[in-house]
Image 1 (tube, rainbow, N blue to C red):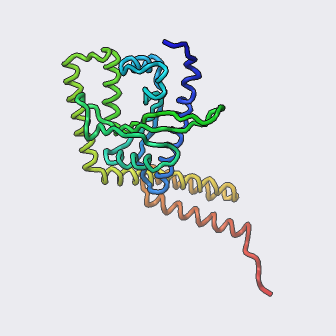
Image 2: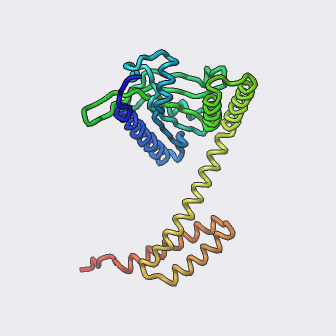
Image 3: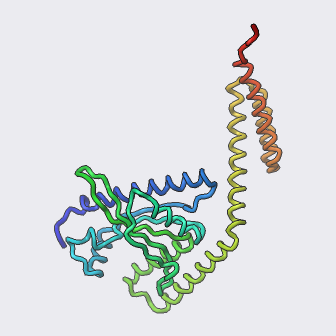
Length: 273
């Protein structure tokens, strides 16, 4: 092993992971605001442990001086999706980005591994701005469904335990589990529209409750204390009965009170001559 300062060596990779996590989380927020649905469920990232880097370098016969180009996943990002269809969409968003360069892709969904492993990998080159100038860093982006990620996480842990020498019975059981995860993803895709409608309904209802409580609180700023207490009482009763139509009526009613209060405070100027 060489005598490099591993803390310094890994700094650009740590920066890459943090910056890409922020960018993909921002992408999720933007898509959700624009389309009310984001194909990205959540994003995680990690820098490979030194022991794992050394193990992989030995396995791939990568010389220590060639780690930066020979090990492509020292910086790793995982993007989780609800549906298999979302994976292709997210991959296209990444291809269209100007702040990184996709070097190549590995489609383990269409061409899944013998173990049952499924995921979509993109090897990218990301320009990190360090204190000493720009540095191009290789990173691996893995795009998976939640079911694929659950299986891959378990398989990784078992491989670590058995040092990549899983017993044949364990391999068979893992393969069956991978097939079950694949069936689950297909079932979720078949009812995708129903799931999305249900999720949108839940979110709309949650926003309605939040908006109603916020506007009731605004009544106090206009010294409408009695109206606020009355509205809060109606809200409590409506919430107890989960009557969302009545909740909408209450929201409109309180908005009307506030609108009238605003006019009392700031009446329109008299233009009469």
